[in-house]
Image (cartoon, rainbow, N blue to C red; front, side, top):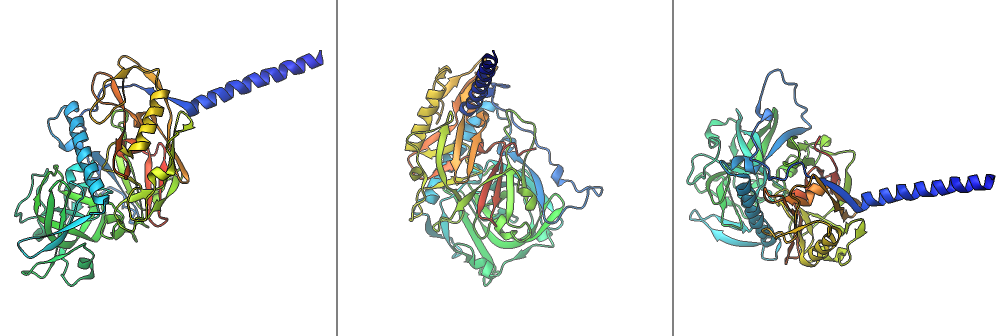
Length: 475
């Protein structure tokens, strides 16, 4: 009798273990996408608590800065959700094309201007391709303007009076003659020589800069030092371009705050003050009312972040290269995807970068096809829908409150990044069509885009030469 009781006990224990293990493996294999809203996000509204200077505010910590970010859609007036999404995909295509051009071997060509200025023209990024912006003060007293933030650019610049040619922006154009902290950079200054190919004004003997972008847009003007104010925290003597001739596909903002790895980017210039650390968290606008944000300083580093080393590309110091080892779908490594598909070679080609201004993650074509096919197998229970734009794997989820989808995990060296379902299955219209938000490319360069980064606090620890990912980091 006692043996029978023992047998029943162990049998019950085994059944319980099997049930728990089955539930555990199901969480590894699939997750629930809750379809709160089948529609595209509406145009966001602007609110800027960081631009207030109320005397009752506590004194800011000089070693840290935190400001809100907004999506560039907020500056595209009178557009429907569908129009905003189409514009986003257009910007994304232009951005990716420019990134591939910049990462290729033919990185620069030389032009000269009528003033004798000779510049290295970078086939880079139009400001219109930047996806997130903030509001900050320029000069003394500070004049608040919108600035696009971009991890794929280095030079900080904004439009300045007098304008030879300026595009339309939301705020009044900055007038350096009304700022007591503005000063030009002499042509003889070592700072001037840090530009790729500096120019020199014959009239003032001050340094000149020019940045040209892959779509034909460019900005040209005086290289200078100026104070930037984030909320009430001032950062003096930031080297920036004061652009008097700015032409091309620019969107509403006054200029650009470069967040790249290069020597003239804002994080590099302000590195000593902020301990060479910054992080951002980009929220999913279809599911969250929390604002996106960026933090500079030690508080930028989340305790829950998993870190992966930054890979150095000696041919190009702007981008943040990471080592992607593989990808899992439904709890299993995708066959056909290996680290060799993402390797940065000795000539500076290939590799994987993380980018704030690209929306949709691009993978080199063999890796994308293998990932897509694995996801299709895991999502075979879902009703397929026609392709949409660059997306070749779409589903009709109309009328459903939630669906089960296979998990997707990016395996970086030292950091497994498990993506929320909303980061890879996204609405593309208001009819319940959702698409797999990855795309393939014939380029050797792969790009981790901001849709896949949503909800993570992405930490750039330049002192430790590493990038971290903290899930649910936008609180």
